[in-house]
Amino acid sequence: MTTNLLDQINARRTFAIISHPDAGKTTMTEKLLLWGRAIQVAGEVRGRKADRHATSDWMSMEQERGISITTSVMQFPYKECMVNLLDTPGHADFSEDTYRTLTAVDSALMVIDGAKGVEERTIKLMEVCRMRDTPIISFVNKLDREIQDPLALLDEIESVLKIRCVPITWPMGMGQDFVGVYHIKQDKLYMYKKGQGSQISEIEVRDGYDHADVRDRLGELVFNEFVESLELAQLAAEDWDEDQFLSGKITPVLFGTALGNFGVDMVLDTLVAHAPKPKDHQAVERIVRADEPEFTGFVFKIQANMDPKHRDRVAFMRICSGRYERGMKMNHVRLGKEVRVSDALMFLAGDRETLEEAYAGDIIGLHNHGTIQIGDSFTSGESLNFTGIPHFAPELFRRVVLKDPMKSKQLQKGLQQLSEEGATQVFMPQINNDLILGAVGVLQFEVVAHRLAEEYKVQCSFEPVSIATVRWVHCDDKVAFEKFKKKAHDQLSVDGGGYLTYLAPSRVNLQLMQERYPEVEFRSIREH
Ligand code: G4P
Image 1 (spheres, helix red, strand yellow):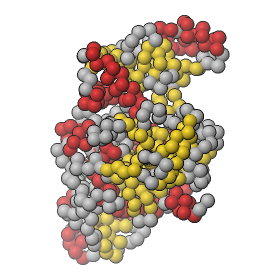
Image 2: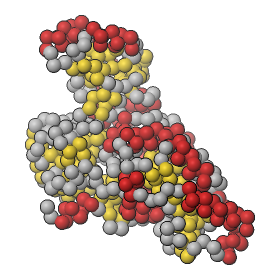
Image 3: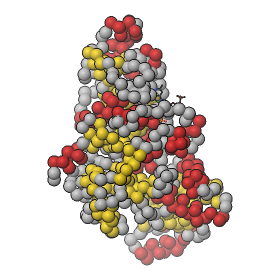
Image 4: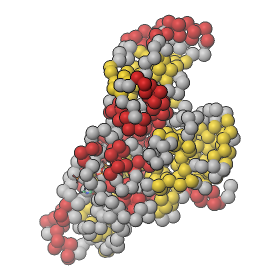
C-alpha cells in the first residue's frame, strides 16, 4: 500500500453532533464550517423558533438558513486532517435515521446547553453511542448566558450519562461577565470578546489565569470562586487516558459559546488530536480494516429530493476501506452486479460537487435510481456484507388515506422513496390494497404527510389501524413455511424492501403464532 493512501486514511475524522433540540447544534455546525473555511461568514440564526417544534428541523431550515445544512454531510479540512461532519436528523423523535447515521461515524460531539444541562434527547443519543462505544467529545455551550455551576454540570454528565469527564478548558465567568476559558494543560487563558460570532478573529491568549485586570473585572469573590472550582475540577477529574476515551469511558469537556464563535476551534483541535481515525468494520464474512487497500463501503442513508434544483435521490455511503476513484467499478454485492461509478458526489457547505477521489472514513453520495437500499455493501470485487445497519420493527401504524384517488401512482412512488430513505416504513398487506405506514415515533407520520404534499404533490391523511407490531418472517423449512403462510395469509404483508412481514394485531396474537410455528423465525430487526 502506498504511504499516501495510509496518510489519507489516518487523516480522516468522521463525526456527528448529538444534542437536544435548541442546545446549539445548528449554530455549532455553522461555526465548525467557518473554522474549516468551508464558509466565509456565518449567517445569523434567527426566526426559526416558530417552525422548529412544528414538524422537524430540516423542513424550515433549507428555506431560512443562508447555507444548506440539510446536505447531511459536510467535509472540510482542519489543520492536518480532513473532517467529515454528519448531520443527525433534527426530528424531536428518536428516529431510525439518526441511529443509522451514528453507525457511520467514528466519534461524536455532544453539545450541551449550559443553562439546561443534560436533556432527554441527549440521553437517548448517548445510549446509541454507548452501544457502539463511540468516543464522545463534550462541549458546554452558551457561556455568554448565565449557565449552571460548571462543577454541577460535570457531575450531571457523569451521573446521568455514565461517562467520566476530563475538563480540557475551564470557564472564567459567565453571561455578561464571561471572561474566557482557561486551558488547563496549556496553562493559558483564552480571552472572549463579544461580537466576533460571524467570523474568525484573533483571540487574545495569556499565560496563566491570574491577571490584575481579570480580577478587577470579575471582582475578588467571583475570581476566587473560579480558582476554587478549577482546583476542584482538576482534583475530581480523571487523568487523560487515550484508551478510555477511545472506548467511550471518558469524555474531554470544553466550554464556550457557539453563537459567539468561542471555543469552537478548541473542539476541532481536540477532535484532530484525539478522535479516532477511521475504524474497522464488521462484515458477515470478516472484519474489514480501514487501511486495507481495496475499496469497500456501505449505504447508511438514502435521501430523496435533497435539492429541489436536482430532484434526485442520493445514497450516502460510508467508505470503510481503501480509496474511491472517479470512474471506478464497484461490486453491488446484494445484486451481484458490477457498476461503474463516475458521478459520486461530495458535499461542501450548501454545495455539492462531483468527486475525483475519496478515502476510508469519507462519505460519498451515489445517485440512486431505485437499485440501492439502506444497508447495501459495495466493494471493489469481494463479496462482503457489512452488518449492523438495522431496520427496527416499528411500534406505530397508520393506514394511508389518499384525498384524491387519481394520485395513487404518485402516492406509491412517494412512499416507496420515503421508505427507501428510512423516513418511514411501508407495508403492503396481501389481503387488500391498503398501504400501511410504520414508524418508531409519531412525528414521523407528520413528516411523511408534509413531504408527500411538498415533494410529491399528494395530499393524504392517516387513520388508525389495529396492528400492534410487525415481525420479519423467515423459515428454512419450505413446507412448514407454506403452512404458516396459508394460515397467516390475512396478516402477511410485503415491506418497502420486498421482505415478507407478519402484521400482528396484538402482542398476544404474536406470541401465539410464535408458539404455534416454532420453525418460523419472527425477527424484530431487519439487519443487513
Ligand atoms: P439546535 O440546532 O440544536 O436546535 O440549536 P440552534 O443552533 O438552532 O440554537 C438554538 C438557539 O440557541 C438559537 O436561538 C441560537 O441562536 C441559540 N444559541 C446557540 N448557541 C448559542 C450560544 O452560544 N449562546 C447563546 N446565547 N445562544 C445560542 P434562536 O433560534 O435564534 O432563538 P432565540 O434564542 O433568539 O430566541
